[in-house]
Image 1 (spheres, rainbow, N blue to C red):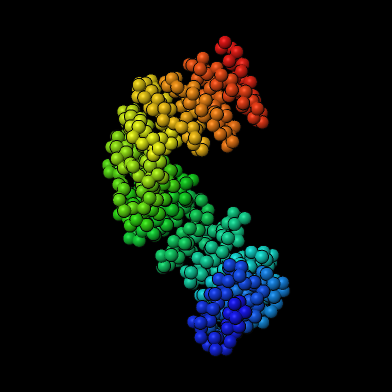
Image 2 (image 1 turned 180 degrees about the vertical axis):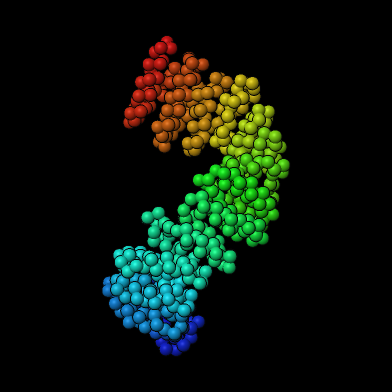
Length: 520
C-alpha cells in the first residue's frame, strides 16, 4: 500500500492535479504519524519540491524536515533545491525555503545569508519567516545565532514597518533570551513602540503590550506607559481593555501610590465589562480579576449588587463567578450572598465543592452568618451524605470561632459529621479534616474513639508523616476525655506508628509516651 501511494504521487499526471496530490500527501502524513510508514520511505518525495505549487512545496518540505531527523546526511541532498527556492520570485516559496533551512540540523553554514537576506526582503511574509527561522536555528545551533549577530538583527526588526513582523520579533527574542531572563526592552524602544502601536491591528497591539512590562520599572518609564495607554481603558474593544489592564497591573506593582490610583481607575471598568461581556470573554475577564490582589477586591466589594449565575453558562464560568462573588463579599451582605449560593445546590460535583467552600469562607465575616452556615452544613449532610459530606469536611469550617458562644450548634454539626463519616475515603484532605475535628472537638461525640479506631485500622498505605502525626494528636486528645475507651486504641496507634521508618514520628511517639506517664 505504501509503495502504491508513493508511486502514485510521483506520476506526472498526479502532479498536474494539485488537489489529488495534497490528498495523497495527507495520507502519507497519517501513515507516518501512525508508524505505518517509515520516514526513509519518503525520501523519493523530495522530487516534489520542484513543483511551482507553493502549498505542495510547503507540505513536502515539512515532511523532509522530519525525514532529515531520521535519515543520516540526507539533508545534503536538499541544499541545492533550498538555495534555489530562497531566491524564487514567489515570496511564499522564499518563506518556505528559509523556514526549512533553519529547521534542519546540519545546514547551519547555509542559513545565515538567506536569513539576513530574508530580514531585508520586501515581502512581510518572508521577513516573518526569517525572524522565526532564527528561533528555529537557535534550537539546534545556538553558536551560529550568537556568532553571526542574529540577536542584534532581531532587535533591529522591532523597528520594522509591518506590525506582524514586530510582534514575531518580540516573541522570538523573548524565546531565545529566556534563560537570561527574557527580552530586555530599553526606554528608547518603549517610547518608539508607544508611538507606533496606535496604528496596529488589535492582535498585534495586544501582543506588543505583553512585552512592555519587560522594560525598566523606574517611575518615569512607568508613568510614560500609563499616560500613553490610559485612554485605551475606555476603548469599546474588550480585548484591548483587558490587554492594557494586564499591563498596568504589572507595571505598578512596585509603586504603591500609582497602584492605589489604578485601583480607582480600573475596578469600575472591569466591573462593567464583567457584567456586560459575552460568556467566553467574561471567562477571560474573571480569570484576570481573580488574579488581582486584595486592594482591587476591596474596591469590588463596595458594589451593592453581585454578579449572578445564569442557567446556560458553562460549569467553568459558573465556578469562576462563585469564586469572584466569594472574594467580593463583605460583612454587610455576607448573609445575602451565602443564602444565594446555598440556594444553588445541588449542582454538578465540582460546583458543589466550590459553593460549599465559598459559603464557609463568606460566613466567617459575621458571627450570625457563621452560625447559620454551620446549621445549613448539618442539614445538607443529613439530606445527602454522599453528595455533601466530603466537600463540607474539606471546607474551612472555623468551628473554633463559634465554640464559645454557640457550643450547641458546633456540637450538633460535629456529631453529624462524625456519625456520617465512613473511613473508606482515599482523600487525604478529608481524613486530615476528620482527624482535626477529632483532636479539637471529639469530646462532643461519645463515639469519637471508635471513629478514630476505624480510621487507623483502614488502609494506611498512602499515609504521609503528617497524617500519622494527626492521628497521634487526635488519639492523645481523646484519651483525656475517654480514657477507658481510648487506652487500647491509643496504645495501638503509638505502637504501630513507632514501627514506621520515620525519625520524626519516632520522636513524637516518645514524646506522647512521656506525656502519658505524667498524666497517670
